[in-house]
Image: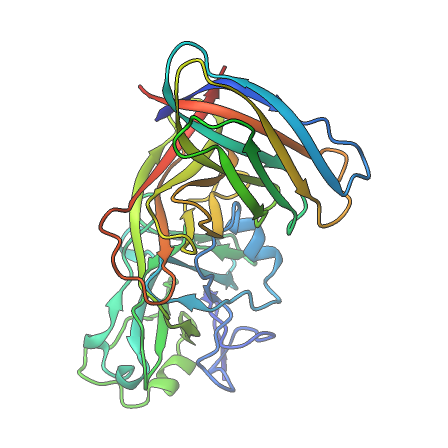
Length: 119
Length: 290
């Protein structure tokens, strides 16, 4: 099995009753370039909601952008993209989306930046 | 008319164990085509829904799952395994009466044999679904034929070139079921493959199952599934539309210790696209280690 090493994971601070959300997450690649998986880990997010993200600075190839994507499975859904990130890259990654209905209290969305280390 | 005191296969909802069965034979709700999805706990799910037909259309060119169930009307537990394992065949409707043309579905998610056990008076469900990747069909349709054994009854498939009265044969055998299949033919290039044989090992864990799609055309629909029961939720990602050339999607599941299963993925390309020579698809199972 692959061991997913998390470089960064941040849980968005969702508020009960929110229908739209938008959060800025600081990202720092550190001194080593790497191929990084940027994913949104959605738990108990209502079906039909949309989620996406984008970074505010260039450098990674391809750019760190996930267009708005529909949540199509419940209670768990993961969506993201893979990008080669240069050393010392820093950015603000904005995560945004719309809930299709008021989410339950146990809803969570994590932005995860990880790389795969094969055991 | 007689009672069938074994594991009884209905041809329609509401039937009890009377043979010969009455009405159409080709609508058995105990053969359950379930499409490309699977369930976490089929024993509980299909027992609790015994009064409902949970059948769904199958999708051509993709990995589909088919469950089987039956009610034990005998006064003892029946454990069908080994040589008495439940068996499932597909046939074209036009060739249904010629058993030599049937094809047995032998592929199981965990690569172990099929079995079906039912306590006296209870409903039994096959231990894991049958796997089938039907091809497109036109001017005909597919049928499924199930064979479930019970002590004291002969439900063997006739060793003849032709069953002269197929519906009559089904009606008289409580352990035989027949179902016509609703199939959605493909409308574009569709690919399915075993992406991984997953082995959890001796520790239960929360696992992220993801599919990495590199250079897969935008607009392609990707999905994956592992048919062996156990994980919560089931390892099933319904079709997700690829939105970039370096796309990742998946689900997170609680996986029990010693769980094993093949994980199959399906790709349904946008209409007109047939060149995916630069595309790669990788299934990834990972536990999260900080």
